[in-house]
Image (cartoon, rainbow, N blue to C red):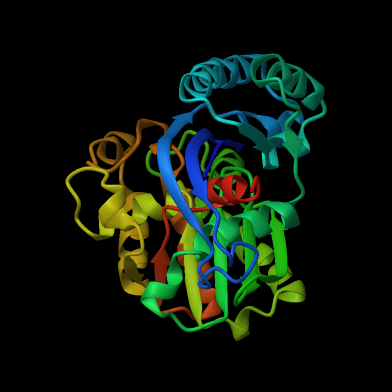
Length: 318
């Protein structure tokens, strides 16, 4: 048993997983071949909006860095308290795009004592696939899977059965597109939504160039936009990861939730029981990305996973 700490620093949130990983004889095999166990010790998430303004300025804002480092210091205290043997910090879209990412790297080294890995979109996709698919065997979904990780700055697409076989990262994240198309909209106008849809559909066409999405038989959706949409579709009074994890949400439900979110005011979105305060401003765009994926690629349902790149980062340390 190895206790590890995984930190995923994205455009919208910074997350921590401290977990005990037990390795079996199949650890390096396919996800459903006795690949060991992962037991949560701590799982935390803070909305820090690190990617605030990056699409427009190309730089990480000082106040965004301050919010991120404050959350990380709290995480470092938890890591010390629980005695994790290994720590890996992974940073994704916002830091890939930022001209001043050296400031971010220096802060992370000071807090955790390790250099953050600013990974490529393909690396992000592979880690997401690993984290998301290890538990799917019990559901016996049809393969190949198309794993879709909708982040704040980008969305990762990865196709595979037992491992990632093709992947593509495109710059359509819920924060990026909200700032680009739906900024200060309460609710957004039809013209704003049409503009966002055109941007999403262009990116989805690019995904088809490198990922054979039509071969996929099961869509697996990851990250906060997807899990929030699932919680709303399930009618949950409050966010319940156990109910959301491995739930199956139909395309019709996704479309209905997306329509309602895009027509709701900020106050109405904030009043939704499953809504994290940090997602109120961007959830409409996140839902729209999921809805367009299902429409354009012809999926009738999405299997929702609470386990994603964060779990993949943890697994990668054994």
